[in-house]
Image 1 (cartoon, rainbow, N blue to C red):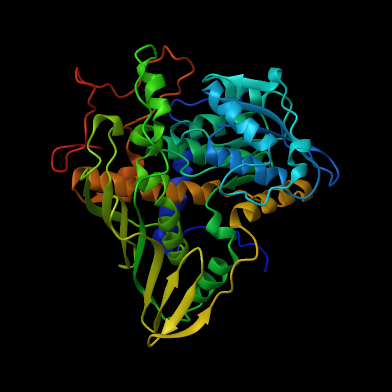
Image 2: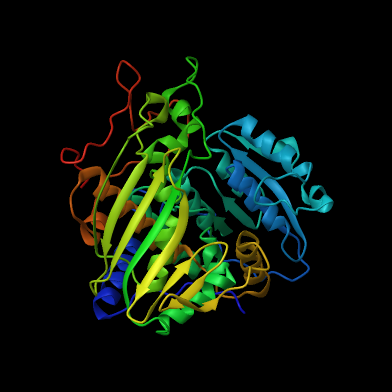
Length: 462
């Protein structure tokens, strides 16, 4: 089965108009970002020969970035890791050492001994600091892997497109509506320049999900009436890093980026986006409003920044279909990462291990185990598109799913019903395009080192 290319998220005239409006307004300008078409670096991508070595820059050298780099190096055809950039030197060196030992972590256990031969990153192409992404992109590479904290995704994507680079970037694509609009503007520019863009919503490259959702959209379980989706786990993969008196507030927050909503979007954006993306894919549209609740039940110390440890959101789509969304990071509770679709003539249970369609509680279809990791497949598809000049741009779909997650966070932080249109139009910006450690962090602690926490019924987000 050919890998599924995410279809535009519209189901009827109303949502089609909403989507066109969404993209048209986003592409007009970037509300303070770099002008897309005016840079002297701008160029159109050239056709890549099948045997041409593609040079890759890794920007953001954490665990997921390291995994994405290994997957890029594992695609068909000659590939070189040519440059690396990270805000922190120890993260870069740890990532490089891991790849050189062919021990890149939990996503890439099958990396072979030949991996090291594809790495050519001498000290002069290891760039440290907040401006390192620019130097890596300008070092003569063809593809930029953008996996720094999500707050910087719009800035980094914008610069890469301006420089005429193909891009793979991780989800979420932004942490506020301003960033989503910048992503969409850059996505439009990438299409104009014939650049290929992949986004780390890898379920779109799982044959199990592709087949299950195609059948749902064809009506095998009837009309979809409601959906439930979950990312309920125990502790997050990240642990807080102790504050050092000698570093700036911005450095401290970047060391702990996961626990600050301006940097990560909160875990409803950073992780739960996968489940929300699946539900949007099922519906072929985005929701029009959300209401919810959430808070900090057990993760209450100042070392955990300002994010919540649980969110519950009720999303509504334009045809009245509802999606009940839950994400939680609390030890000792039931863990569940899955999506459930209820139809008028059956239901679907979707998950990374297996997807199943049922009618009258009896299985009518079940997927075999995916033969390949979808993390690898998403890179295979992207690099195949680059080498064969095929259309490939997943940024628009990634922006829609990112905005869906942001909408949910706005609802839980306020306890209000928030409409998609109001959320997307918001001019409130959380992030900064920091280029120096002397730049101010957008969030400041009080005298006790505590950060302001969103309070439903009090906090205003629009």
